[in-house]
Length: 282
DNA sequence: CAGAATACCTGCGGGC
DNA sequence: TGCCCGCAGGTATTCT
Image 1: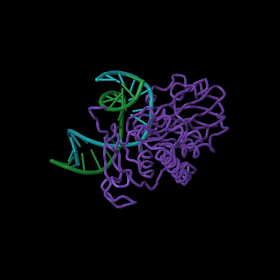
Image 2 (image 1 turned 90 degrees about the vertical axis):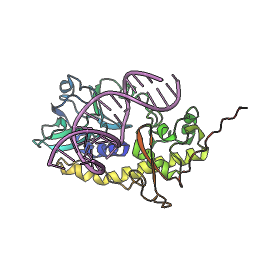
Image 3 (image 1 turned 120 degrees about the vertical axis):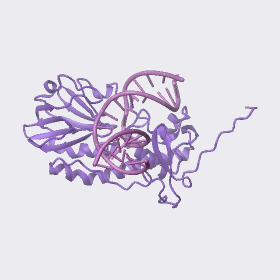
Image 4 (image 1 turned 90 degrees about the horizontal axis):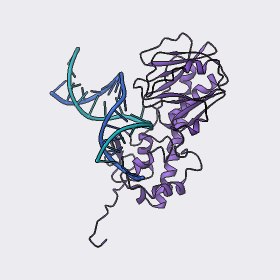
């Protein structure tokens, strides 16, 4: 469910309903997520007014005077805004009540998500301190990418999915960006040319911006306050389309597995990397 | 040290 | 219909 654009969509969807509002209560039905919820979370948040809601990578940051709630949606997490007394389901683990009448509900079947609290600057929290630049910021550029790639021989797809290199890029968008940039996902990161780095940076920004734009249309779901999640529908060019024709050249799309993650690419548009030949002399 | 495998959970679709 | 298997948008932790 949540890659960077969906987290951004979630943020935009819930923000107008809860910013400046005061937390009156919490209902915790399931405290066991990736890590157990803080024991005293209700006490920490009670009577706290939401001062700011921001995003860092795939983490949502809810700032209060006492500190910051750090929330990650994991693989299957969702947040939605509901009216009080809305019926809850099996995986609706946490309800945060604002002004007695609005519920911010956290739903997560797989419970890979996380909810943490820090009294300090969240950006120095161990989970956030090592995250790379935001892909849509100016600091994420080809100079940065080629500099970081120099030391790494691993597949470019794994490289750009490393949050220490870039914040928030997941399997779908890594796959899509490599297709757009016409780079084979297995190409070693330090074998990319300067031009390829430039193309890849541009492709990442393009695909994320477009996805966020499309996610914007789902904001209506949040406004309905009816418990429906914000769907994120978009036109994926290659992800999940293995065996189907490449949208550019119509050759059948290939699938492979890179460090456990399914990867789709076009063998014609994304030519296989040159294999390095080991010679006796060198 | 880089990079790969593993672990955490539930649900779903396909094959039998 | 039901069981078993593999797979799923993430990432910290453990291993080699």
